Image 1 (cartoon, one colour):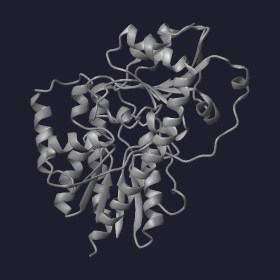
Image 2 (image 1 turned 135 degrees about the vertical axis):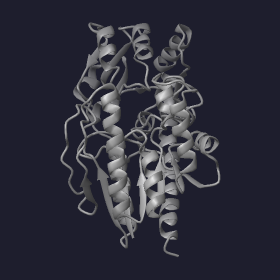
Image 3 (image 1 turned 30 degrees about the vertical axis):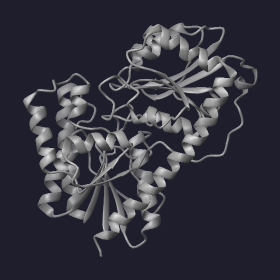
Length: 384
């Protein structure tokens, strides 16, 4: 059996989707020694548009790199290049594999994969990190009634995957409503990991303020305005913010908060800082629920940290919390922000949310283990 995993990004680049794909590839290779597992990627870089050399993953998963077409382009040029990349990845993967698991980057990868897998009679599972063309609508690039959006959505319904792999139950329900529910589906959340607690960094020993961290992508699905308002409403005497954002909205956040006395900026936050922040900030703009499920929340739970969630209550990221944090619905009001900050500052509230975060991680680890087991059963079912 030949299993291909397809995604634009691949380690050593730090893109969350690339890391999730590499972890899944390693898990499948370990659980299915009878199968050959290979990653197909452009190797494009998540942060700066450069190329990343692809190598074997854990020595047991090969990597085929399909050179990207102008990944660094902007606007329409970047979209066109992404479409070409997606088509070429689909062609290469389906020519080699008998089963393909594709992620949803480049945009519309599923459109090309649906065509290629039907033509070559290859089984196909799609892991929906983001949903396209819905993301174009959520980002304001096209209207919901745009005929091109409608045509793309229709094509994906007609050539749907054989298995839907979703990040959470709300996203799975959304996908089934949009594309029909006659197929198998399973949950495979991403962003989880197991690690031993790290020693606190030196600054933590003397810092008496509540520490909130935002690390990672601040892109189209996230609100720089809401994060900035949270910081601006917080007392510099009571709160410290560790901010290490990147993405399309990071510069706007930096410009707005430049000079704020209770903000420390970093290119990245190391693991000990993330372990010992009191809470992590997670943002999701209205309209992106189910289209995108930020992995930041699950990574925070993996560190035993609660989240301050700026976003829709319907999102799987917040539903997974089950008390492990505080909700500020979008668009945020001053009253909601103030109430959340007061709860973070309250020792009893913080202790309760921290305990709930540990429980959330254990619960989510069980969901992922069950999803992985069901995926392996599905992969092996082709040989029965």
